[in-house]
Amino acid sequence: MQILRLLIALTFVLSFSAQANEIQIQSGYVRAVPPSTPVTAAFMEIHNPSSEARALISASSPAAKAVELHTHTQVEGVMQMRQVDKIDLAAKSTTHLQPGGLHIMLIGLKAPLKTDAKVLVSLKLDDGSLIELNLPVRKVATQGHMQGHHH
Ligand SMILES: [Cu+2]
Figure 1 (cartoon, rainbow, N blue to C red):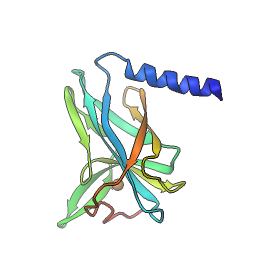
Figure 2: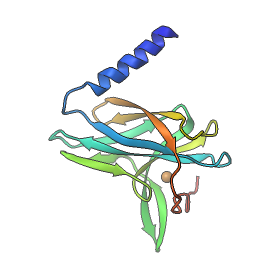
Figure 3: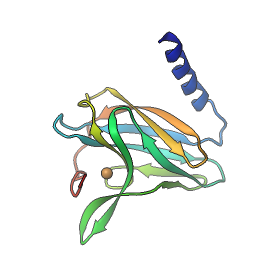
């Protein structure tokens, strides 16, 4: 267990001390939901400082049964969530995952999320690299994010 913890710590150090060309994640969090709500979403800013376009192709979390990449679209004047194959990370720019827009959907939460707890979320990029995040659970003012969700 000690060795496992050390390896996890080392993985974090390595992923954060990587070259300046690496994808950087900032301001990440998971939206707090009432215990009766089995779905939530993760939001963050993904910075791609390189001159190469990249993409987020999948995400996973031990806290949820399934994790999907989602966006919001207007369908007959109503905002609805839609699953997307990938989230494009344009070269030299920051992609915002935020309420009402792109987000990472955590479906089938295995346990209620406690505010200020940390949720492990792994991002997989199109170049095969993995980014491990430990995101805090935070309360967010609701803006009908869960409307039109049909899981
Ligand atoms: Cu969603």
